[in-house]
Amino acid sequence: MIKKSAPRLATIILLFLSINAFAACDDPPAPSVNWKGCDKQGIDLSNANLSNAILDKANLAGTNLSGANLRNAYFNRATLTNADFSRAKLMDSHFVAANLAQANFTKALAKGSNFDRANLSNAVLDKANFNNTRMYDTNLQQASLKGTRLKEANLEQADLSNADLSNADLTKATLKRTNLEETNFTGATLVKAKFDRAYMVMTDFTNADLSRASLADAEVIDIIIEGAKLDYTSWYNRKRCRSGSVGECR
Image 1: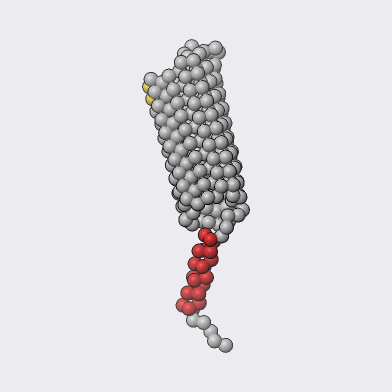
Image 2: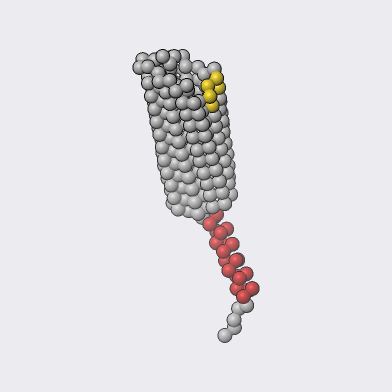
């Protein structure tokens, strides 16, 4: 019986593993597919079923994922700039530290997903469902979130400067220590939202509902509260606004 030398055996094993790793990137889209680190930029995956898929560190820049089923999929540290997630199903998915600059999430369903430390600058999330999402330390500069549902979302320490959240629903959302410089909350529902120690410069709360919200110890400079409901709101100086307060904490 001829015995293989240890170096030769190791080479065969490494070759086998590299072939398998390469083959995974060629696998067709399917539930639980493993495309970790693969280059899938610019391809059409619209309406594909990629539930439970692993796409960590993959390159999907400009990829069309509109209408796709991406439930519980993993996109951690992936490159997803200009990707299209419109109307996609993203419940319980994972985008930790992913680059999603200028991505499109219009009318996407992302309830319960994790976007901690992700880059969503200039992204479009209009009329999407982001209820119960985690967005800790997330970059949302100049993002469009018009009419977006963010109930009980965790946006602590996020950067929402120059973002548009007009008519968004952030009931019971956490926005502690967020950057809200020139953020637009016109007509937004912010009931029981927590803005403690947030940075507010020229933040626009026109006609927003801040009833029972907390702005305790927030840094407030030239904010706009014309027509804003402030029933029992905890003001930045820890004063409790009286019932019926509108446009002024009385």
